[in-house]
Image 1 (cartoon, rainbow, N blue to C red):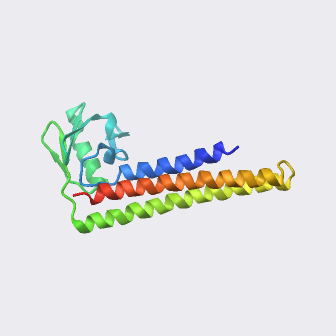
Image 2: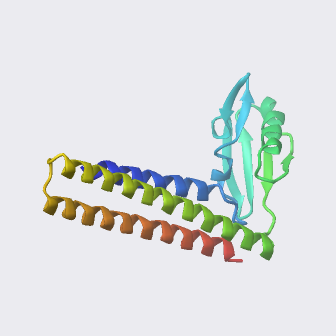
Image 3: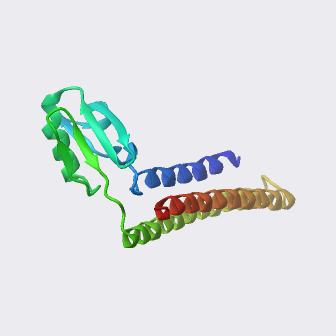
Length: 181
């Protein structure tokens, strides 16, 4: 019965991890390109499916397309995205150089990380509320006893506490990564 709510909490945590993968922390991370689509023969295609993405150095990404004819399209897609990096095209591949983050930008990113973490905690708490409402309804209908209700509410709270701790750990980990020079 609680497994469906645990799955929902897990999805909230996974969504947070996905958002954190897109936050640029001064190091090159291929996941920053996950949401970028390239116009490939008239079809919006994820950038990972039109070429090879490598990390030759700590602060640069190299995108080598399978077909050199789409270099301009890759460049255009990156320029139109919100990652804030200008691509360099050398005729065979596109290079993205990540500049060193300033102290102010690091603090701004850390605030954003905390804000996303709080939103994730709110989602987990909303799932807890839904679970508690469901067991109270079962109790009211006579499907479960008062003792079972209390037991289930305790289990729901323990589950919530566990996921809130995991969210806090993710926030701390990402904040530490961002603030490390």
